[in-house]
Length: 209
Image (cartoon, rainbow, N blue to C red; front, side, top):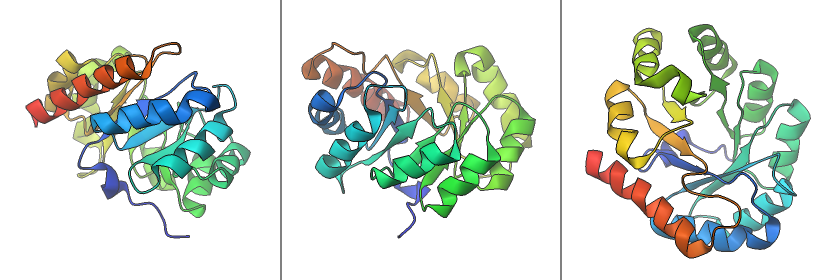
């Protein structure tokens, strides 16, 4: 297996978090978000039949977007994501065993952290990037403070409470990218609305670039 490269996210480092997505709507929702400019989709494992959604998204979007799982809490769950065709594993916490297993499977690892200690445990285990979560509790000031001690070049995504208007402040504080959930996708929204939501974030990113 050829490992997935984190650099593939650099052009537009926005991850759509599709919590609550169902398999039957997965491809339509995914197509709307990718058409808006996103190149990375996350299906949290506490969604209905998440592995089936990941399979369908990967088949439909292969070569156009990375597809993976969020809320990955165990080594076994990471293996299941790989078997379903997932390309990245995202967690709300720092679990060195999950990170090492993810990398052994050739997938991208983006674990969650909130303290510098967790950040360094994740990096030592091989994480490709870090997810500051919940970002709304840390704020841009927290991002800026932790950036001071992290190795140069560390990619840090802000996840939680980010909207198009606040992105520039986060980027000024050192955010490399964002994970965006309900501001892009909520269960019950149609593809047209989801596409509009996604386009607002893409426009904000490009405006602030």
